[in-house]
Image (cartoon, rainbow, N blue to C red; front, side):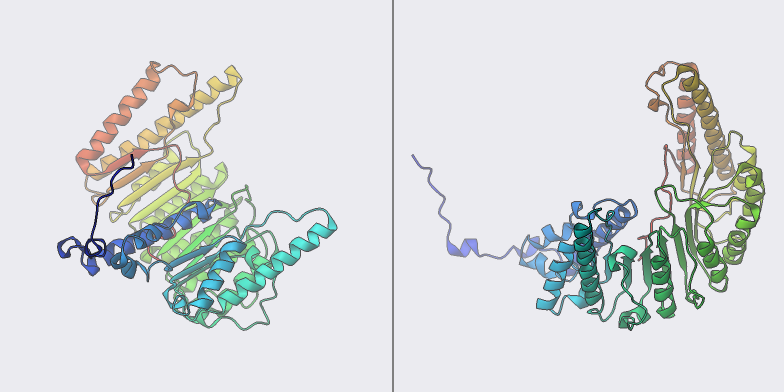
Length: 460
């Protein structure tokens, strides 16, 4: 027997939500704006990690389908951050903006990040793939010229697929752009693209992020924007460490700016002469620095000299509130003690990490040797935390609230005994340091890996 349906009147079905249940528009706008910024942060992180962006859905899409009241509020935030990573998404966005001209003014950030694989080996398939990429580049250029204003623009060199952009007139919104992200590739076209955008950028450009720029030279007419405030240079993730003449040229060219945020990672400096442009840049901007991240590969013979120079620069950074430092591993605290003693009193967030932790192997003798090295390295981390917390108690770092240490995790070793005395002593020391941090008002965290750059979407 069929179940009886409950009878509802038409008045009940179409009744609007109760007045006391409807949140004010101002409060909903604040909540949805936070969701939009969170979505932009996560998509930016996925792009940096070369991950697939479309697997992270926009939470505002579900919010806009709740009711008409929420849809009206979220309508202007749905297109606030647009990230395109494939040809199908590009076609959908181009069709939507052509059918509804009111969508383009709602776009606050626009990012196109195509990552192509190698071309096919067969001649016919290769020509077909090149034609497809060239057609996609033409449509990307068409969409770029549809905008009238943008706050942030990000693009990869492969998205334009060697398109000759020099004879073309730059988009009108480029003069008013405030934030620019460029992902390079292993060709000279990436350098031409960078030179083209920075040459035509207006004085309003304040943030510049470069991803994967490891070779080539800049255009002779290249000049950094005069009002640049934030610079992020992030190398390739496939181990591309080598002499970077282009990046060193950038380090020299930003001396006339007043940088407040600097993030340099996956950088290799083989000699002390190659470090000089970096030291000159940091010395120039030390009085105005607020956030600094250095992820460097420096040989042992010159690392002591660099740390001493960096300690002198930190003494000049009176406004620095975030400092992140990552270098090759050191089994003694002495090279870094000078750096820890020079931390400015304005510091609120500190992150320290030593790269290239020893990977355990199957050979028992080599594994035991690596384990001893890892144990010594772990002692260095704990001594660093103890030294920093001592400065907090003495009042030298009274503003410090967060301290992350890239400490080794013993649980990675499968055949390690949980009751091994050195391990239990290390775990006990960690608990004591965490408790000491709580008493001093500092959040102490231990992890095997720390972020290898500053979050790029923190205030876009």
